[in-house]
Image (cartoon, rainbow over all chains, first blue to last red; front, side):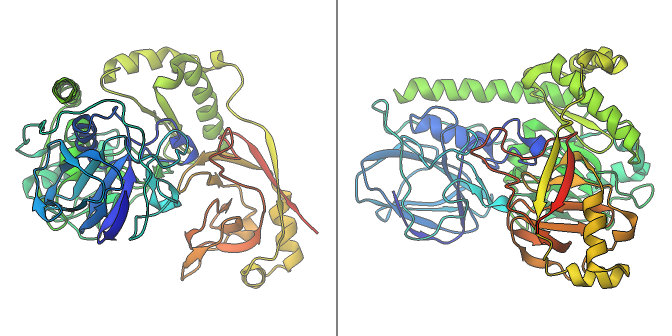
Length: 310
Length: 199
């Protein structure tokens, strides 16, 4: 497929890397992994094939071969040759047809999965784009007009019109306290959940910067650099939290008051720039229980889509 | 797992020993990442719960000697051409001659405590005290890959072109990160590093 316009931040992403944090390469990959996985299932692809992640603006591209595709995540505009087509649905495109896709303003990242997946060369087992290191993906960079993306082979006929999506989650984004609890004053834990935080437009794939009531540490402090997790809530001296996302640094010295639980990471990544997010504390055992439940629910949905799409 | 809130060679040695033992015990399914004074275990909640992993770790942490030799420990020599754009300024600010800056930078055998920041960046923290300077007041928007730099008590090599606020004293042709190589990073935790001046 050929990019005609790449208005926002469009990158090739899959599920990223496992096992390279200790040499400085973060997990990377799709910020909202569930949406990419559902898109791949709808496009008849194996789990983990690469698709497009689109933020901040509209992308237009032309199919060079007949292919099915599915748009997921924060689907806003989705047009095929000027005609609106549904998101979260398997759609057929013929060679020469043009597609426009933009994220909607209630979310942040839209995904496009194409039959066969985007077949750029893999680096260390992943086709994800790691922009801070100019590595992976399509020449290590964001996509631009004129780029031609190679597609993988199609393995089977796919039933057009298949649909599937996770039920929209509501309520606060759940967070769990971490091992650095002791560095914060008791009031800091109430501050985190007392009022909404707003997502700063300075946020990127490395981190979501929050603005709101400052979170107070016991003393101004950084720690000797240590490993960070995706979802970790760092608190710099100004008390404005930064939540690590997929491309976030693998190590850091900021104090961390807690972590966004795995079950709510995709939903948190979709909070729009300028949008509000409300947090709620949960105990670690509860966080792990609901995260296992969420993984099971997603696996069941993916399996249902894979059955329906054949 | 936290050993201390302050950095010291003794704590780094304890971390390396525990890391080695834990990797033997847990295998590749748990991603163990060292910091200066910590080891973080990344795991899937579908494989482990916090209590089940803690129960698996505890006996190893009580007897970390069971894992054999600590991780890494090779001596890696990095050839450096000392002609960086900040070399003269570093000499002026430290009150040393350019030759003395090079001699002191090459005299220390550094130990890799952790990697991070960008792929292949190794934190080397035992810089000669006479070379300790604050970061540049204005960071450069682009530091070339292979730049050898100092800041605070640390020295390092930029694996890729990135922004940076460190003082650039030289450059190396050594590839700090190469995804086509196994392992991709030139340096590993526990390795000893010596910079060697090229004529």
